[in-house]
Length: 115
Image 1: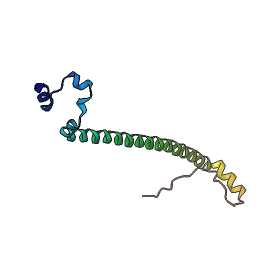
Image 2: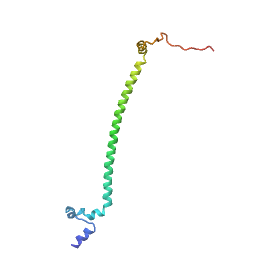
Image 3: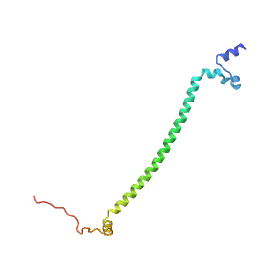
Image 4: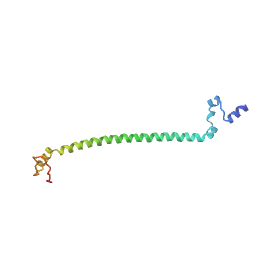
């Protein structure tokens, strides 16, 4: 009988003590408080890290969508600009605004000086 009490006091538990729930006694928590606290802190850090990672991934997805929309707007604006600077469009615009300008009939040429 004393042998069993000494074994329990020394921290040695057998299968019967584990089944009866003596494994998680107040003494167990006192002896392993530092490890238990460290385990809880690590679990909380893991949960917080997962939350931050998910938030960052959601922000990345939102920014990718915005980038795709901006690139589409860029292509549309570029297309509109290129159609506006065509000679036929410029001539049409000058007629609509009643501007007394005419498109040149001859191609441009380079002036050279005599040396």
